[in-house]
Image (tube, rainbow, N blue to C red; front, side, top):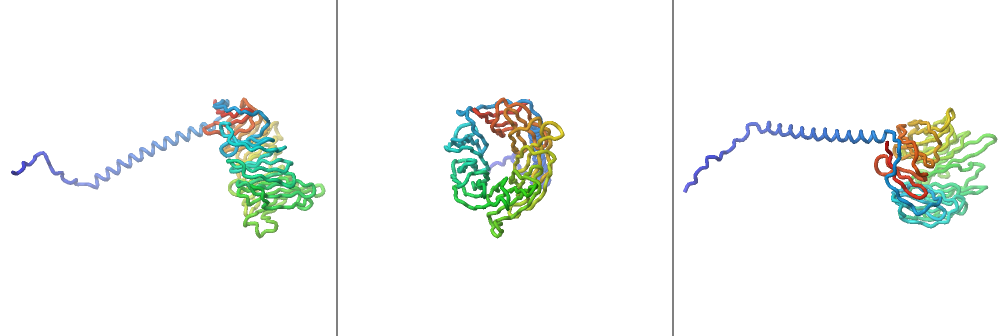
Length: 398
């Protein structure tokens, strides 16, 4: 039997202009993408604007967010390292997390402990003694016992240590690996080379920069020497890849920065050296004020200068190519200073001053505790403050 044809079913004719329909679909999709992108850009602008507003305005109070008490109240020293804090004193070296909880402790017998901190390693030496301990975040890497008293120390990220060993007649510069094996020795003749006044090692451990001071008649001069113990210095006499002399100058500090640059700081100027394998003198900047202290990061060089024209002090900040970024008057000298990111953090006892790399005084006032170490915490305008008996997290507010 034949089926009855259903009259409500119709075959749709193909569209006359399929290309026109597809063009409309693409137009709708493009409009939707534009709307999403516009919304995303607006959100990003709001976030960036809020961040810039919060990081570039001044605050009047420092409030406490968290407190982590300590079971010690001795005269320890503290330094930020890796994801925690190092506490060191005559009797031991302790690594604390950011809740002031002990992670490990290494007993020591050091009469005058001094510390050198790098990104991946740090060393604690007995200044005037014969012992150096090298640590990583996991604990002790090795111990070094020197034949002569330790006078100055420098180290690399890998834990390679160079020390000036004190000897009245002929001091030595000896380089050790983290376990105490001697890698290089430099015997110094003060009558010829001068006496070492500053020393620093590159992060890779290949380059050692040393400043020597010599006196001739009524004048004095500093001699800056770079030794390379890698391939670049193998065919050089005494591994010397750079040497320069500066009259009427005492070089008191040397440090390496990012971008393959290093800086030698004299008593009235600083010299920027470009390169490590084949260093070259790049720029000398004369300072018109007396240097009180110097500090640095990979990006910036900071000075606290005695303000000769006015009472008080001056904070001056340069980038690593020697351009002046900030000059601000300070009411006090501030015994401690550090550069962290785009901020200069100054503190002395309970007094604190935070200045941005654009010259804005972000905070100036009391911390309510005497700070032994201070550095940024996670979040905007938050900082860790280590005192004798507790670790605080503070935040800045209006």
